[in-house]
Every structure is written in C-alpha cells, then in structure tokens.
Image 1 (cartoon, rainbow, N blue to C red):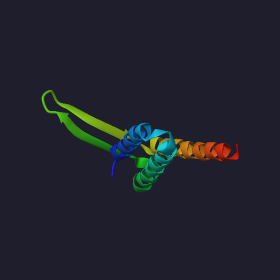
Image 2 (cartoon, rainbow, N blue to C red):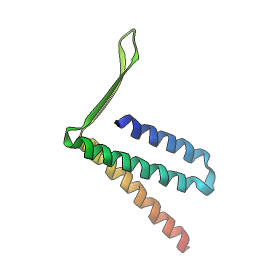
Image 3 (cartoon, rainbow, N blue to C red):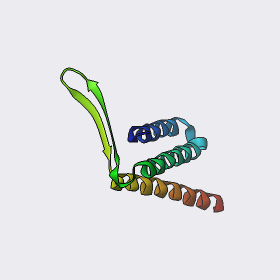
Image 4 (cartoon, one colour):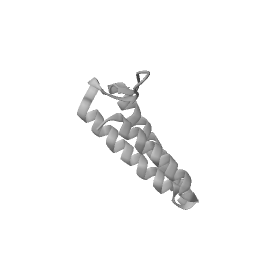
Length: 99
C-alpha cells in the first residue's frame, strides 16, 4: 500500500460525487472520505513517523519519474483533514434534518 492509492481514492471519489447528482452526492462523498481515512490510518500505522515514498518511471527518455513522499506529519495532516471533512458532513446533515 502506498500514498498513491489514497490520492486515487480521493480523485475517484471527487469525480463520482460530481456525477452522482444532488440526491446521492453527500453519501458518495462520505463513502470515499471514510475509505481515504481508513487507508491513511493504515498507512500511518504501517510506516509511522518514518513515512513512505513511492516512485515509478514515467518517461524513459529523458529520465522522468513520478514520485511521492509522505512523512509522519503529512500522513497525520491528511488524517486530520479527512476527519474534519467527515465531521462537517455530519454537522450539515443534522442541521438540514432539523430544519
């Protein structure tokens, strides 16, 4: 497991949320947010403060590669951001139901 999976989950979630329509957008967004949170917590538990990196060759001539690096601070920041999004979602849902 690497950080690229988390980014792909968030990208796919954003695209599917956009195309899901008003009725299912919040449910799709929360599903992908929870999935990203689970993967980021698992990544944090697996690698801890040492972090992780991912590198793949993209174009062979000239030598260009795709690289991602996440240390413990970046992983924890991502966890906090995803938790914030989830909490905001539930606060808005509760307010809409009360109105």
